[in-house]
Image (tube, rainbow, N blue to C red; front, side, top):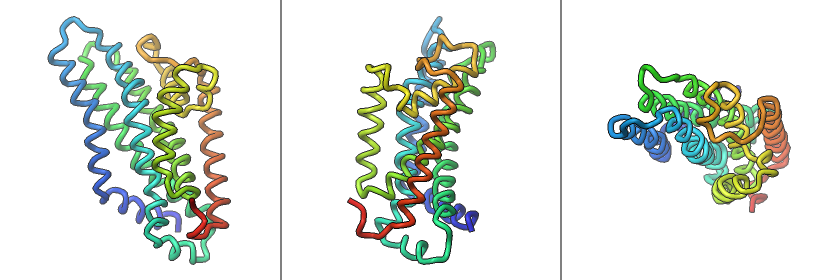
Length: 244
């Protein structure tokens, strides 16, 4: 049954107009990298690529894509009132949550990995070390899972999950965690960059967060598990009039 819900949700997400807009968002770093490749002379391509990955893709493309997809995976059905047909079935709620998070994860990771690979290979020439590209490709896959789990769980609890998610992305991660280093352990962006930073020797090109590989993976796993458990519990007692 998980596979059926997963397939239906994927079909629903891919056919939405907002997914096309997210594809255009993912294309922006690729176009900027192409512009850099053909116009910048004697520039450090590795530093440019690291900055693009950490400051644009990990800081903007990844969380925004996950936010739009994650809040739509189940939240759209709740808004439309069609989720009652799904919840009326004798189906364990954790299976619904797994399918919804899985679908949001697949769509988010696919779009963001395309942005990473496209921008990385567009900016770097054949002589450059492309290890940083593969490091970020792996890191954003893990980051996509954490963001997807968080935003799916928010969509169950709040009717304005998109606004709350925007506040988290643009206020907490983009401002607070950047200027107050002590709270970066509460930032999924920091976990993502921490994973990428440990997978490449070009650490100097990455806007490192100071989190080591163990801390990044453990904290990311904590977010996924906590969001999953919360989503399951909320869904078990969910009623259409519950959300604020």
